[in-house]
Image (tube, rainbow, N blue to C red; front, side):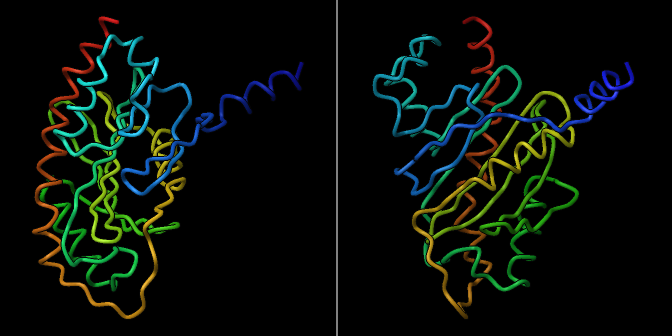
Length: 223
C-alpha cells in the first residue's frame, strides 16, 4: 500500500510532460518542437492540411491571416495560443552577438513597451529577451530575439495565469528552436536605437494579434 501511495505522490509532483512534434518553417529560416496535441499552422504546411478542414477554415483564409499579422506559426489547443512573429529589420545583426549592455538596453525598451515589471535575458542556444505581462484579458509570455537582421517574437497566451510547469513548457519550445540563418560573429557592435526602431512594427503587430486571438477562440468553441 505504501508503495502505491508513494507512486501516486510522485506522479502528482511530476512537471507537465508533453510529447512534442518537430516542425520545419523554412519561410522563417527556423524549426521548433510544439506539443503534438496542438493544432499547428505555418506558412509552409497549409496546402492539404486536414486540420484546417476540421476547423472549417479555408486555406486562403489562414494564409491571409498569417501574412496580415507577420505570423509564421500559429499553434493552439483549448488552453493555449502560441505564435511566432517574424519581420525583416536592417543592419542590426543577431542578438546572440550583442554586448551585455546592448542586451540590457534592448530588454528595458521591450519591457517598458508592454508595461511588464521585469525581464530576463534567456540564453540557451540563442539569446532571447523574455517578458511576462497581462494584455486584453490575456496572460502573455514573450521571447524576443533578432537573427540575421530578422526580428522574432515567440509568444504564448492564455486566459488564466501561467504556472511554473506551463512556463517550463514554453521554455522547452524556445529551447527546441533552431535558426538556419544564424552564424556567430565576433566583436560586432550593434546600435540599440536602431534595434528599437526596427522592431516597432513587430511590437505593434503582437499587440493587435492578442486582441485577434479572442475571435479565433470563439471560432474554436463553435467547432
